Length: 338
Image (spheres, helix red, strand yellow):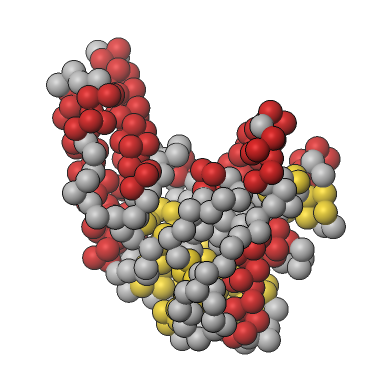
């Protein structure tokens, strides 16, 4: 059961304007057949590039190996984490990672752990590494829940992909067989999913962050998606870095002891605090150089983030550039208003 101030089905935009498959209206985009190498799997089938971890009783996290994949959107070539919660009345899945291939791995693990059907899939964000596997659950008629901002982000992204597909044959080959599938139910304000005696809280953040949390108050587990990265460099995308920091500070105060990131191992308040501090330090480093009149190229040459032995360092330069763009625009606006 869902309880919310506002809950409705997603609009028919995709059904009217995009190709549909069954009841899920989705734009056809391309293939994700991936090579599989050995990775030690906890409590599940062997020979796959992921670990399944039970972080609390009946609460599981699917953790992929850090691999740059050659199919799907090259901007999201690393698979994001996913998870699921097993109750006596069904399963709630959280995020669908970056391809139908990986989403089927998540579904395989669900079926290994429970005979119950999947009742809901919840998208914590709209980035490709979180949602490109949505179609696997839509094919099973599973309701896909998220916020209006995330639903809109996915639709806008699909339109951008369509333009790339028509102009770039190589890009199109990466997507053969993948269908972008937006959420078909949305919630505004905090929403509770009550299932099998458990209450699962869906908590949206500021719409500009395109993010929602999935909080299990009884288990004290918090799924944060790409809002939290544990020892991975993040993508800034359209997130306002100041509001991002504020949101992280907010969740640090919640009564949770396991924080599941979009990339990296599940952590605690300590790891969330470290990630927030990283963003704060980055913002301060860039802001100081903007105040000194330095150009973007100068800032990027000085703020290399090499002191952080994190994964996905290929994203570091883009992160610095994004923060520079936000802070320099803010500085110009402040100067103009004086």
